[in-house]
Length: 453
Image (tube, rainbow, N blue to C red; front, top):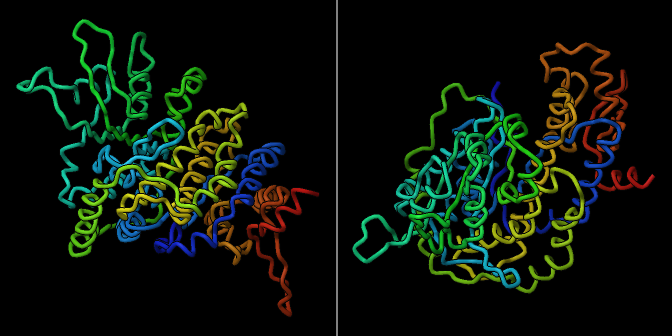
């Protein structure tokens, strides 16, 4: 039987619900437990679980509308939609961090297994709304990042008013379905691609010193990459991480959300209605300029979120190299949520939604770059228990995840390993006959007690 959309997401939620769910201190505790407690006993980092707070505002509505019609992971759809919106809005709205101007550019790198990851479906699903919004998105779409020089030439400044090869529109939306090829090209001797990518993420002028040197001033380039975790790890070198080429990307782990033998696609009337609203939102967002934090958001950022998203900066792990831009990403995403509502102030609700997506990204980086051998059975049980929340699952229901093909001894070992972490617990309930035993995620208070004991 196919899963329901609620297996990976719920309806877009309002600001009050986001604030009720916003608990940065508990998140820090949970993250450090996952990275230290789990790994110290040999368990792998868990695959990330989506927090519904990220499905917020109009982007969240787009994801919800499309979710029943596609096998794509809703988090992948959301990240692709945010990237596409940031690209088509253009360089007008921005968020200032210190003396640095940050454009609202989001570069999701979707990690998923070949075929079952549904990476392409995630981006296609997001783009159907952009392509029907009448905002010129299709004109911005390209693929095939081959060299720094090629990227510059695509949006180079005109040499003269009559130069047909130049352009004043510096917006691009680049989708790379084979991002491993881009990584290989960037490693070639003499390649400027990595350098140009770093400059482009910052919105800085692109230029190289060659005989036929072109310049591309004020670039506004969004990139959506697709790659399998295995390909990424094979292509990656420590020098790549230290150089910062890939920490410009927002790692997003995706997988098939459900089985749909005959997906119907978004209904035309629903597509038309949401695309019309997106058209209006993009047009209004282009009029927004500098976006700042309102007073409550400033307090939340200063007292909690800034510390959360910079806490691992001094850690020396592959995943920390990949997430060093978590703090600016949180502000960029929050500002994009605000811009899509024609606001120049970020609220705590915007921050809460952005923080949920960035936390998912951090968990994705840990999951993808954890070099220990993973037992996929453990991961499957984890995800099922996380989705079941307080209800939990019986042993029989857990066995059914594997079509009851896992031997009793193996299942015992898996469940013992999970409960030993303190993240999961078994709860016995008297029934008048044989007691009922359910497994579930441990409550945050109990987790903290487990961590301190």
